[in-house]
Image 1 (cartoon, rainbow, N blue to C red):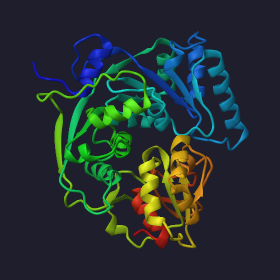
Image 2: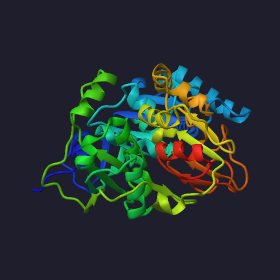
Image 3: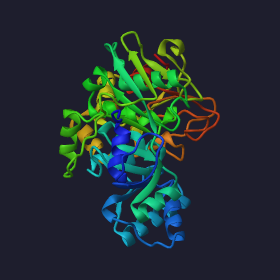
Image 4: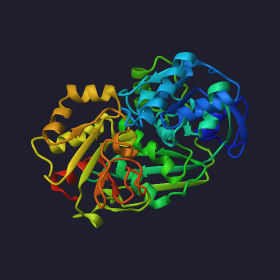
Length: 412
């Protein structure tokens, strides 16, 4: 019998059966999460199921991050629903200013290697960097998981992606995942899992790995998994008191496809409007004027990202025709960045720092661009209207590229 992928091992452990890709299982979940755009729907669905509480309050969290602080009375009502339900059920609630759900859930120790996690948000796949099978679900499925602690899944096939070679100057993990998105296309891994491996992944920090796993959904994948190594276990040991159960792939695991990418000659990448897979080498759009830059979101709002931007902007001032918005991914990251002087550097350069959370990414507030403006962003999506104006144009790039571009007032 052939070996197993990470996904097959985690689903076997959580369903109590010997499963393979393609099997339908009912599995126990280790954690369930909802944010302010999805939690109120989940709460309503939960009550429609005849339930008034959750299966385990310690394994459910509600996070106010998408519209935080509230931009209008409608959102304020949704936040109230979440706070009241958290009080009634005893589940975790992360209120305004705590940060983005996908930073908070691992940072606060709720997940460890080998877990099975669902979240009512598509970028729940971020935790795959920590050897967690985590995937986004709809609010009704999320409600079912909150009530029962279980959910049905079709075990996905896995595409193995091996990154080799030496990264060029200023080429980052964001450039890697953008390059892969351009290679696979927006539906290139639909209902499959991605397993990222190779010496380039091994050399990366956890912050860098999270950027890659975060964007697995942008090629249609259910999860973006990585093996658990010493860095993974050390990071988990610093953030959680739970015991990890690492699930690494067998050498003879069966994959639907194996993709090996030598990154030696891959330059910095950028996704042009209005699709994440509309990716070209940065040089092809150099000189494009920009009105606004964004550094943050669940993709690139971590400490490594703020450090990279601060290094470039130190002692300099952004272009007078360009705005820069910085959104730390969590309060802890914000505080660490203040302690290390990154925030002071960014503010002196002309940045506006907003409340930890999703910031301008979703388009409800905090930096909606004007008609015809070009925005360069470290976010994960650039769909038409994504940042709140369907007449604006969003380019996706790394924090390094965004920082250099806001200095010049154009993509550089």
